[in-house]
Image (tube, rainbow, N blue to C red):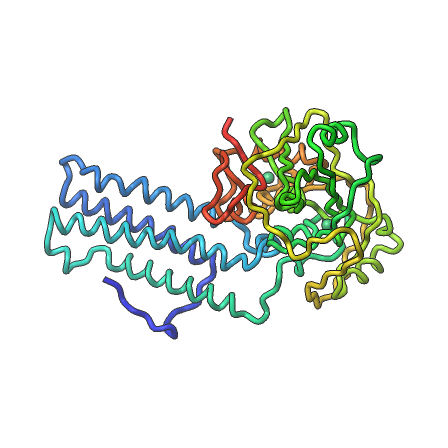
Length: 412
Ligand SMILES: [Zn+2]
Ligand SMILES: [Zn+2]
């Protein structure tokens, strides 16, 4: 059925073009089905095995729409190899379409007209789908071999201006499994009453994940040695006002915005930005007042299914370790106008689809959880790509290769 193209004949295709083309081809399959049904079956009722293709095609079309909504430039500064990743999510759609086209044609050949085997009514669509498949695979290969390929955290300013809040580069690195966080012990006198009670009831200790690039710090409870890493902690948080969302501290690390350090004043801001945008990340280990403070309404509980700690290479306590990410560009940001913003977290799900509703405006984990419950509930969940990258569970179910959720969105 298919026409074979050599590698040289394959025209390069962009991701938006490929998605649009696949959507158009789905429309063609629907029209072709209708034509054949009208010709061979109408006015008799359409058999369910043919009728059943329609909802399948609708689901595949919806998956294309969700991928089309992703803004590749924004995705590129959050996740590794963004365009190739979108391609990886589009390829299974094409594969299922090829199966569907083959299947429906076979039904007409077997039950209505043997000559269709030679006329191949779907051949043009089939060939076009195969071509898109090969173009995307080539695109992926080219992207992965590209010597100019850069880590997403290197595409964000080291110290963004207060006027343009952005996800911290270390939050981005963390999302992509590069944990450069510094660990510090939380002294007993710094603990809140609720936390002291927790220690009395369950032993353990509180550690602080300190961002090496900004003033962000996040404390979390460690109950045992296996769960000492923030990626493995069984410190699961929920809030009584948002029962449908629970998360681990690691999700907040992924969503933290660049927090200005106290020396980031207007007078020396540009100078500091130049310094920290050098090839080595900053190394501020001073105490900060930007703790993530558990609300009284929140509950912190242990989850017994956290059994798969992923131990980071950069796991160490305190110290003055510097981390190199091979950054080569210097960045001179827009001069900051004020440092009054208290926003600490952004919503990556809104960010990648260009939504405007306050995606960078959450002061506490609870505020972000409330936003997720309102805008990204199970019925309107983020794209499968984002669910996988941010390790999000829907009613506890994660993508196949995600062993444990950082954020769990539950049905009401
Ligand atoms: Zn940071
Ligand atoms: Zn959002």
